[in-house]
Image (cartoon, rainbow, N blue to C red; front, side):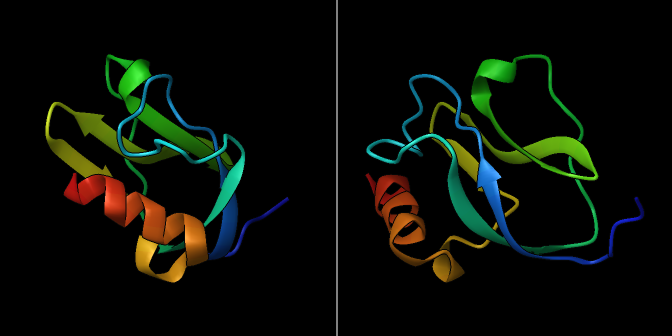
Length: 89
């Protein structure tokens, strides 16, 4: 099945264990994506949240005090606001 690019819409995200960024957010929560490119996996998958759209890819990454998301937390409703709150802690 061919996928549409750019990827626009909500996708379920699998969060990493012991994640600061996803603290108090359930696994399998949907976040809003708008993108045409994806980040390939890094050596430590424990620091990556993932989702699947045509292929499995990195939805968010965290290491120490550096966080990055492929999705738009500001457009991801209540759970996106929680990600932003966690980012500021």
